[in-house]
Amino acid sequence: MIRRFRGQTGGDMSSTDEEAFGEDNTYELGLVVLARGSPELDSLSSNEWAEAGCSRMGPWDRCPGACRYIKMVRSRAFEIAEERASHGTYAYCRHNDGYIGFRGAVVLPRTTEEVSRAVKLLSSLSIPFNVSGGRHATSGTASMGPEGAVIDLRRMRGVSVDAAAHTVTFEGGCLWSDVDDAAWEHGLATPGGTVADTGVGGLVLGGGFGWLSGRHGLTIDCLVSVEMVLADGSVVVASDDEGGDKDLFWAVRGAGASFGVATRFTSRVFPQGNVWSGALVFPFERAAEVVGAVNEHLEVEEGDQAVMLAPGYGPPGPDGARAKAVAMYVFHNGTAAEGARYFAALLALGPVLNATAEMPYRLVNRQLDHLVTPGARWQHGVAHMTGPVDAAAFVAAASKFYAYVDCELASSGGAQDLRNTVLGFEIFPWAKACSVPATATAHSNRGRYYNVGLVMNWTDASRDAEVRRFKKELADLISETMYHPKASRESGSNIAKSSQYLYGNYLDQPISAEGAFGDNAVRLRELKARYDPENRFDKLWRLADRK
Image 1 (cartoon, rainbow, N blue to C red):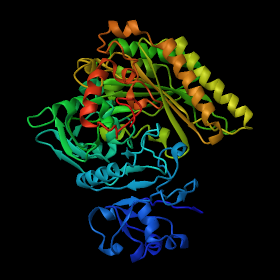
Image 2 (cartoon, helix red, strand yellow):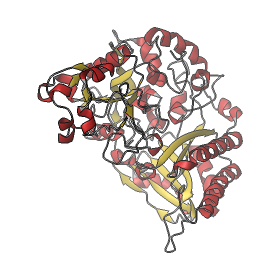
Image 3 (tube, one colour):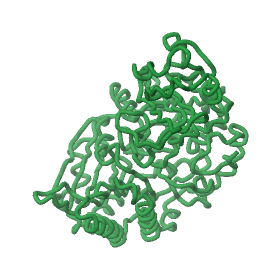
């Protein structure tokens, strides 16, 4: 018999859920079992629930502690059907339709103690689990099949600012908008994600960079401490301060997702005023001129400016057609007048759209939100390039992208399934990041090279393999024609010599530890054996053999 169960989005149990479990069918694992109301549930005997790993508790209204906040549907005693989830249910993955599915368990803690209890419980039952923060990633590492669990931190979004100490403390389920907004109330800011709904945990633990990195370095370079639940359920504060775990602090700054559940971060924040930023849009035919102006920018950049080149499509015209265009997002950490003077060469090219403006810093990270809206199917890829930007190679890469999308457009009878794909050539100053030695943190990829994010967006599930194949081809082309290792070395790179120059937060496929961390992989493996000997936190890079 196939029984279909669906987890809910949040809050207390719905009436339907409560009706499905009477007093005799409510069980405790320190968790609450939730499901869609079905007469079949009532037919499950206590023995069947016990076989699923549950032990009897009391009525819902006397459910203590974590039971209200942790949801679980076990699959040992019954089969969970692969049914597509709808909006409004937990099984609808908020960001990426490519990883929609049912989980054996969904854990929704409110406190570090509840996270610890969940980790201990899941480990004791040998249930594999992943951790979900902002649910923004496309790699699937925050997803889990029906045989496992997801510890979802969405209810842990507290933020506090100590303006006198210039620090901000935020919980692991926060989004960057939570941190930006809280710090801005005090005229403060710290380097964070360039999209507001990026989760803090994934970005911080993988290194992190943003519009302020030219002035303050990577996100991890501003960290003061990280509270983490380890694989055995113990709670440790990682920091360089007296009493802090210094070895773990080294590891979590770049490889943190491999060591535990980060429940709280403390970071330095800095005085921050308004900034000048926005989009300049040019016809694709002028791409070479735009790249030339970007190269002029690279010759004089001071650390307070950044640009992002994004070849794509403009809005639909009267006939529904979308013309090829190059959007250029510019940033100057200062006034509008200063920004206009600094980017005068670009403005002189006469963009068809100028959406730049002076704005509060907390708004700058919301500019790209429309490019990565929830839903559809997403997958991230990463390539790298060095400066000066090769205009011919840039045009060739963009042309390959356009040819693929236009071919898809013709074969689908006009459907525009891939036209929301984003190619982001992220030209952020790296001098500040390069001032930190490669061995100072686990994140060793510090050099004067630039990330190219390939954010593939489509809706037709039958095309998954094809789109992923093309994404790899395009990433390989960009890295082969636009990345020059000699230029990176001569500019003062601190990149470990064995590194493959890949930014961990953009990875979507497994990679070797050396590929992700270079020479730091040796120390990381030693620390992994100490802190997570059973390899509960097994990520895209392999630091230990899978148990």
